[in-house]
Length: 405
Image (cartoon, rainbow, N blue to C red; front, top):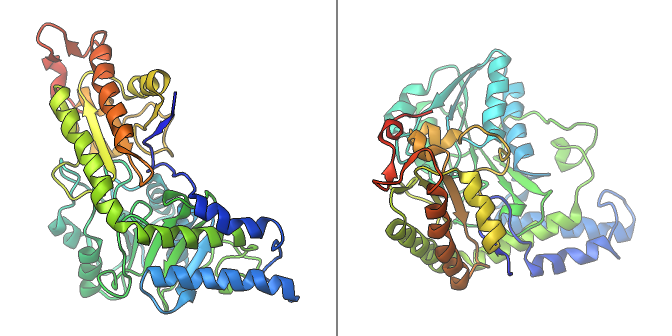
C-alpha cells in the first residue's frame, strides 16, 4: 500500500534537486569553510553563494543579515533570549496564546526570570484582536513575537500590519516573527511589506530542505546577544562549524520554492479546498478550524465531534497508509488537547477530535481522493463506540457540546 504523506507542516520530503546540490559537500568538498587552504575556500564560497541566494529570496541586499542556525527552534531561542540579554532594562514581552512551543516556552522561561509576558488571545477563527494588541504595547516593552502563520490551523496573522503598528508606537520595540510555516510557501519581502520586522525565524525542513538547518533574519543594527559562543563563525553571532552541505541545500530548496509559488497558491490550494469541501459534505458535525480567517494554502485542520484524534490517525495509517497529524509534531504524545484549539474555544466534544492535513507540491489529486475515501468512514466507525456520540440522534451528546476543557 502506497503511503500518502499529508503531514507537511511537521516536515517535508527533501527535494531530489536539493539532495543533488548537497552531495558534493559530503564527498569531495567536505572541507571546513573556515580553513585557509584552497580546497576549503571552495566550501566557503559555496556557503557565501547560498547566503546571497537566501538574501535575494527575501529581497534584501545585505547577506550578512541572514544568520544560519540548526533549526527554527534555535532561531526563536536566539531571537528572544538574545534580545533580552542585549536590552536588560526592558522587561515586558508581547506574544500570543497560540504560538509554537519554541516561542511559548521561551516566553514562559522569561516570565520565570522576572519578565512580564502578555499572551494575547484569539477569537473562534484564530484571529487576533488588533485593538487588544495595541493596548498591550507599553513603554517598557522589549519585544513582540507573533508567528506569521499557525502551524496547527494555518491561520495567517497580519504580521506586516502588527510590525508597522509596533514601530509607530515605539521604534525601540523589537518585532520578531516565527515564519516557519510560511517561508517557502508565501512570498516574504523584507524590504517591502515586512520592512518593520527586525527578526524572522525559518527552518529548512518545512520547505523540502533537510532537517537540521534553519535561519534567522537579523536586521542590521538589531540588538541581539549570541547564545552559542566559542567560535568566530557567523560574524561571532553563532559559534560552531557551519553545516555547508545543508546550507547549500536550504538555498536550493528556497530557489525551488520560489519557482513553485504559483503551484502552491493554485494547485495545492485547490487540493486543500476540495478536501475541505468534501469533508464538510460527508461528515456531520465537523468544523474547520480557522475557516473564517486567512490561511496558508496547504493546511486543513478539522475537528470531528465525538471522536478521538489519535484513534483517527491510527486508522488512517494502519488501514489506508495515510500520514496526518493531530497538531504540532513537537507536542505529539501529550494527552492534553491542543493549546491552539483551546485558545479558540473549540468545544470539548471536538477539541480532542482534531486532525490536521497539510499538503505539499508533491501531493496529487489521487492522494486527496484516498483521504476523501477513508476519512468519513473512519469517523463514522469510531462514533459507533464513542461515549460522546448519541447514536439515535446521530449527533454529539448535548451535555458535552458546550463544555470546553
